[in-house]
Length: 203
Image 1 (cartoon, rainbow, N blue to C red):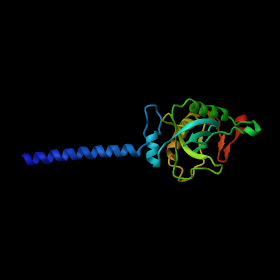
Image 2 (image 1 turned 90 degrees about the horizontal axis):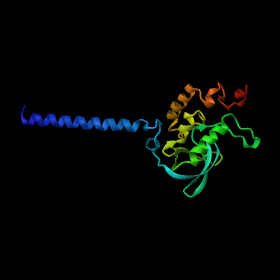
Image 3 (image 1 turned 90 degrees about the vertical axis):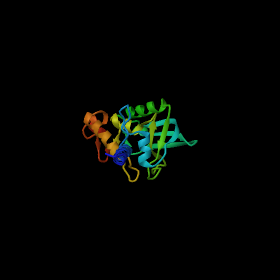
Image 4 (image 1 turned 180 degrees about the vertical axis):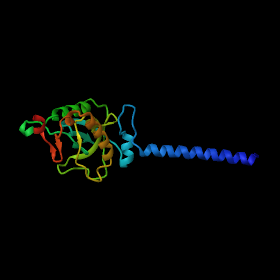
C-alpha cells in the first residue's frame, strides 16, 4: 500500500466517524430526552419539538390540580395546563370530586416550593374560552403535566391541534399510571368519555 492509498483509507475512516457522530446526534434530537431522575420530557426536548422558548414565571396561588395563577412578564395570569385534566374541586357546591383535593395539594406543593418555574406555549391558541393561558409548565426542570400523569392525578384530555405537540409523550406516561392502577385509575370507569364520574367511586 503506497502513501496515496493510506491517505484514502484515513480519509474514509474520518468521514465514517463524522457521519456516525452526526447521525447519533440527530437521533438524540428526535427522541425525548430522558433525564437522570427518570422523567421523560426535558425542557430542552420540549423547546426543540415546539419551536418555542421557555418563559420565567412566579407562583401566586393554586385553584386546583390543573389550574393556578402565575406572574408572567410582570402580569398575573390564570394558567391552565395543556392536555391534562384533574378532577374538579367544585368550590361552589363545596363538593370536590374524588382525588381533586389530592391533585390540588400535589400541584400546590410543587409550585410553592419551586426554585424555578417556567412556562412554554405550543403552536395553537395561547388562551382558552375562559381567558386562561394554555401552557406546559416546568417546575425545577420537570414538567408538571408529566408529574400529574405519572402519579395518576390527571388524564390526557382536551387535545386540540396544533396545541398537541407532546400528545404521544403524555399518552405513554398515562399508560404507565393506568397499568399501576393508581389514584384516578384505581377505579374502573371513574374517567369516561364525557369526564369524571364520582358516582362510580362512591359505589
